[in-house]
Length: 147
Ligand SMILES: Nc1ncnc2c1ncn2[C@@H]1O[C@H](COP(=O)(O)OP(=O)(O)OP(=O)(O)O)[C@@H](O)[C@H]1O
Ligand SMILES: [Mg+2]
Image (cartoon, rainbow, N blue to C red; front, side, top):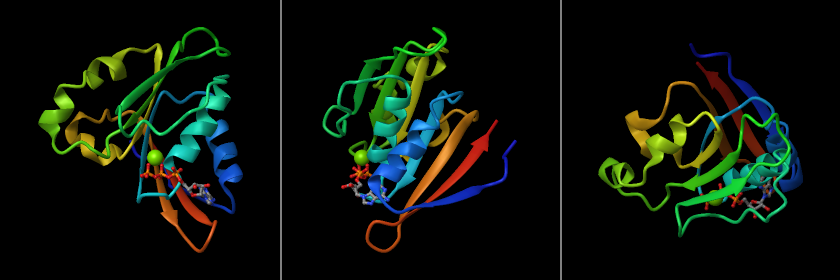
């Protein structure tokens, strides 16, 4: 089921980070979409902070997958995976990454930049967050819950 879309406009990277931070409550699989520089990593940094992760979240572009220990939740969620599929060329390449295993483990939180590259491998139960660059520091952010 697809829930109603919610649209938010942020005016600074801090606002986008705070939005991400607020997502750290109940959401396990978060798919991020949007052009280069639209705010996906910024949002992921806020999300990590919301999970009590103190380490600096850098863009995982060159490593594709980075993982962090979650500190402050109800113990059901243990690892935070930040995945960036920008450099992925096709679904075959994705199959070699072991993403299905990471995603299916209920102890993992998974945030995926360029999530559209996963195609059918993207699980149905997820949040879709789309980023659009408006003028200057404004970003339009669309949020949809799928279940
Ligand atoms: N409202 C805003 N929300 C998010 N980022 C903003 C905003 N205003 C300005 N910025 C700036 O825009 C840039 C967003 O970069 P970010 O790395 O988050 O984008 P990205 O979508 O992850 O890009 P990429 O596809 O290259 O990974 C940062 O430099 C950030 O400071
Ligand atoms: Mg990024």
